[in-house]
Image (cartoon, rainbow, N blue to C red; front, side, top):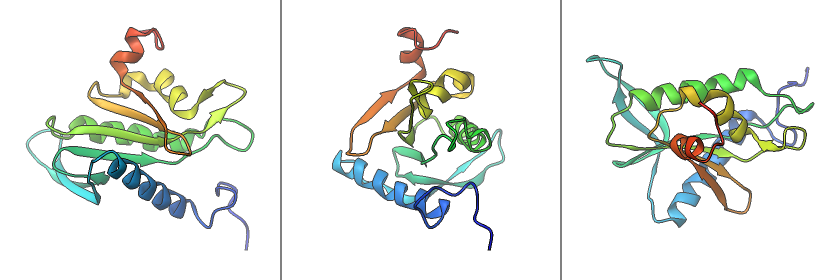
Length: 160
């Protein structure tokens, strides 16, 4: 059987990588006194018609999408996978405003670009990120760099 060229090295499947990362995020937030449920469903929609959407994690206050994606083997942008990040931003945008929205990403650093994949995403796609989304760059070991679009603009990280 042919090996999948887009499979994360050392993992059984990309799906398993995602599930494992969701569990890590669940633990991270629990350690920060935020209890969450997996596969948290709420109704969302553009106008008056709503449909259930399942967020990776959530509760009555938080909606969280988790992403564990890395640069390609040749240190290129995983452009096809970035589309799922844009889709997550769309869902955050149409979700009720009373939720805290968190985009929780596993940190992968590019020596060539001298930035993480999340930092690259913020620089390239800031126009798609809602103001109320909090972006977490999760480092193995439990630390995070935390961003909002407003802070990135105010600090000159992105030029608008």
